[in-house]
Image (cartoon, rainbow, N blue to C red; front, top):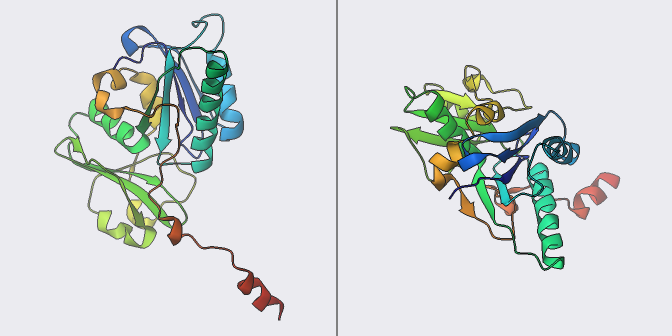
Length: 232
């Protein structure tokens, strides 16, 4: 799969949004932008900055980060892409393809390409409250799936090589020595990662959306009984 002239939107980070348009054979960027702002503003300002007279009049398709990461940010990006697809449909235009990738797998491959001496490590990113998403890489091969661990469980990672994605939350003590993984900066310097590692991408049709490891039943829910009890 060659995403030449595709627009990439990644709003999975809790601290910034990036957007870019791929150049020839998807080995270069025509334009790339990272916005250090909330997703609601960042998705559109980052996209606007790369869409000017120097870029093609229209893109051939979209690359979209489905997570894990900021659910709100990811769904804002998904909504923007769906709106564009809806306009295409209303104009009876050919539907543009949308391919999704996962943030931790992208980070793992960027690390492997930037630091070929690293073969065994863990990539970690903040998840919901008191939880972290992790992806293990063994002998240079990322695991098929990422998982979630509680902050209280992070001591099991203390002896491992750890790379951590940009985060808002303070790292727990066992992760304090984790190496930073500035994934958007690394992506800016290595646009060919998707062309060279096509297994990063999968076709999500016209329904881009966020993935989530958390069981919906595991979240605390509002109950009227709790508040009635507080009033008595």
